Image 1 (cartoon, one colour):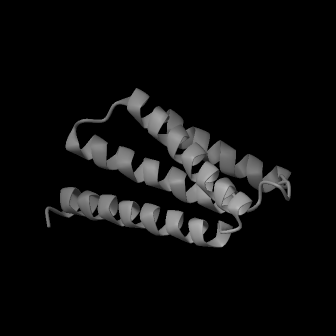
Image 2: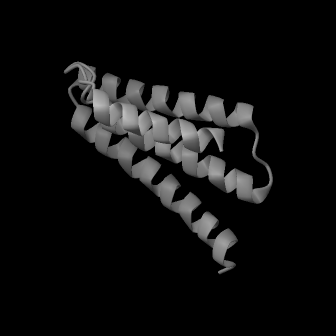
Image 3: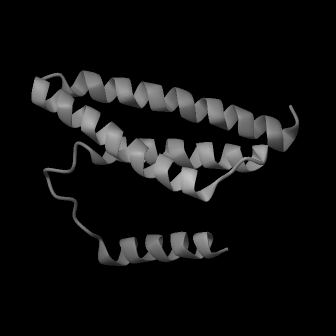
Length: 110
């Protein structure tokens, strides 16, 4: 319940304050969000499997975001940022859909 309350408060504060993302960080934000979603879906799947560990979730969440951002940064430095960004989104998208399918199987028993 605390997490849901924190999410609601965060969304409301974000809508009221309207923070601006620095231009330097803008290319990395969508990748970081997709990486964070991957960790969230993985955590939900682990919870339904009965193997959820909060420490593993936090480390997975942070490391996914950092590694994805580093890959995109490295791609930008090498001049292939768009290709690596696409690759990261595809890989994380596959993982998200895989976790979503497992969650669906748990919830609907199908």
